[in-house]
Image 1 (cartoon, helix red, strand yellow):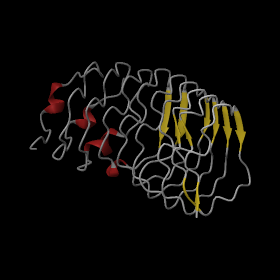
Image 2: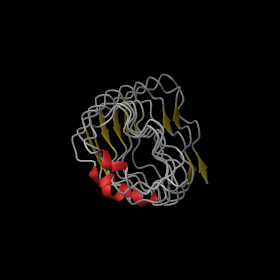
Image 3: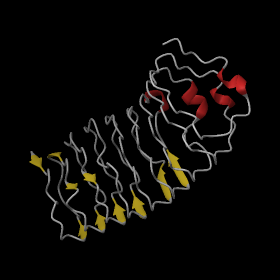
Length: 239
C-alpha cells in the first residue's frame, strides 16, 4: 500500500501535471499539498482512481497561490472522514472537480473556505451521500455568486458557518423544505449570517424540526429579510 503524506510540500513547485499514475493501492494522501506548497499555481490531476484511499485529510490546504485546479473524475469509494480539499485557496479562480465519487466520506469541513477570488462553483455531479459535516465549507468566499450542490440534506448534522460572509449568493443553495424536515441537524449556528441578498421565501422553514439542534446562535443575524414572524411559531425547540 502506498502513502503519499506530505509528498509535495516543496515551496518551489509552481505547476504540476499528474497523469496516468496508478493510485489504486494508495491508502493516504493526507497533507499531500499542505501549506508549504504555497508557490503552486496550477495543479492538473484528473481521472485519479483511488480504489484503496481511506485518508485524504487536508490533502490540499492553504495552497494560497493556487489559481488553476483540475481534479475532475476522482474516484474515492473507500474514503471516510474528510474530503481532500480544506480551503484557504486565496488565489483560486478556475476549478474543475466534476464527478467526484466519495460515497462513504462524512466531512466537507472547510471545503472551499476562504476561496476569496472564486466566483462560480458547480458540485452538482458529486456523489457524496453521507457527508454530515459541512461546517465552514463555503465560508469567507466574498465573490462567489453561483453555487450548485448535490448533497444529501437528510445526512447533514453540522452546518455551522457554512455560508458565513459569502454574501453575493442570490439565494440559499440548499433546498429549504428538505432542510426543515431533517431531524438529524445538531448545529446551524451562523448558517444564514449576513445573507442580505437572499430573496427567496423562507416560509419553507415554518415547521422546522430542530428537536436535536443544540446550537442556533447567530443563525439569522444580519441575514435574509424575515417578513413573516409566524415562521418561528411551530419550531420544535424542545431540546
